[in-house]
Image 1 (tube, helix red, strand yellow):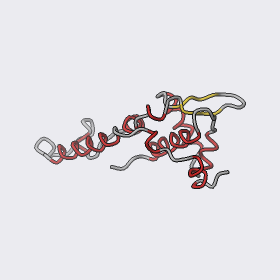
Image 2 (cartoon, helix red, strand yellow; image 1 turned 135 degrees about the horizontal axis):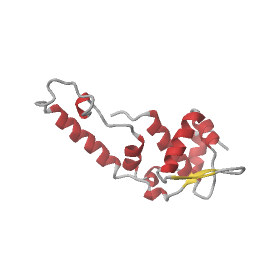
Image 3 (tube, helix red, strand yellow; image 1 turned 90 degrees about the vertical axis):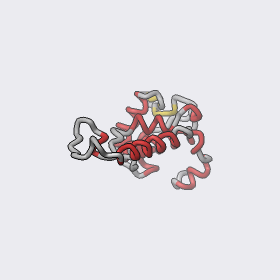
Image 4 (cartoon, one colour; image 1 turned 90 degrees about the horizontal axis):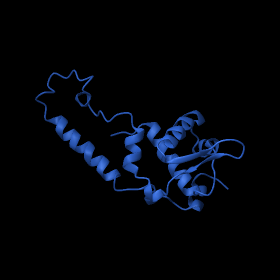
Length: 145
């Protein structure tokens, strides 16, 4: 299973905001600069995270973003489910696009579905709080002051 960049950026944004703390506002530009990723991508990510209630966005001068929830209440499995477009590991997982001739008799899809469920079940055991490192360590890794 490979996560999309969208999910990767969503998780990294949540980690960044979690480490900064809910009392500090952060800008999308700050996160983009520190991770060396596209601000345009992050704008879409932060909009979506806000729509799902993970972050709060404050508009205007002096505005920014911050976590809207306690990190212990942000389940990683749920974030992945919200941010991934689909979990069609193989063609037969999509009812609309399944052209596989052996699909009706294939047992491999059952094992793949079981593996996908196990993957998501493991992620469901973790919250954002489980992955937060100290601010000092984060700043050191990102060469921040």
